[in-house]
Length: 193
Image: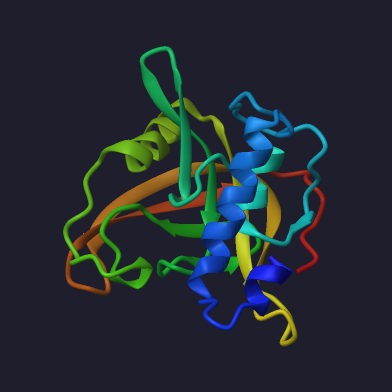
């Protein structure tokens, strides 16, 4: 990464691509840990652990998506959410450490150059709805601004939550979005950030 940044034509968008390439190399070398998708806690990861780059979430098994904020797995014939990343790309709201209002996935102009469209109850959105109905735990990872020196976002593992309810309403771009209310499971270590 230092060598790439030293090159005069280095573009900041290349940083993410480089991290993904490194993560894929580590996967190919079988150096990823916690490789099986799972619902609930991940061995070796504690509430409050800080992760310095999004692709590291893949390598340690906390969240297995490079791009999508909702990760899920098949359990029987049903998609269930395993983890979500509240990275700041959507208008998520964490009113308190105990409650997160999470905007579903799909066509967010903040996250790229896509044209806004109504979100559909499919993929990750469907997995969160199914998790609500099944009462399964979802890992929540929160993105926060890093230091002035680093200018990078860091990620904090907030712990396990359950999806309490969801609604569909008009979002900030006038299109229908899903809003999932997640409640933190009691008796977990307190969040310090």
